[in-house]
Image (cartoon, rainbow, N blue to C red; front, side, top):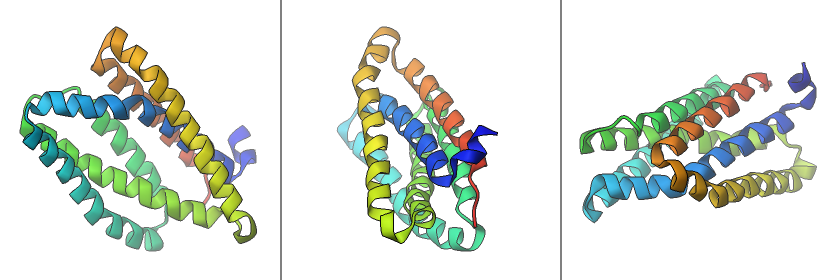
Length: 184
């Protein structure tokens, strides 16, 4: 199959540039959605704080257990969970729901960001690591920027929910690509 011939770096780059595109569509409008949903600046701040707290605590454990269990399962589980969390934002009806989703978002974000850095270290060679990671971040960043520029049009035409559905679907597809990476 075509993905098996690409190698880990290229599959990971394809998966995460697709993920970055999806998050670029979502992130600016997620912040506005949170602010509108929460109503008060205090509730907005608290919901963001919950997410960052969950992300901070989870990062250590995700990294520690990935050393024992492998990176791939954390990448795949985190990706599918993130798609579900983003979809679930369209279903919530209370601040308690929002706070729970923010914690879940923090947990999945911790898994993904910790594994991204760790897996890149695993799959790059020391002599070209800087160039490979620089190329990776350039492509991932460009994809996010392009999505942010176009996302406003989609939200302006169809509202928040559609962008959340599109984002969750793209994340699902980008996560599926991770089944083709191989761990050593």
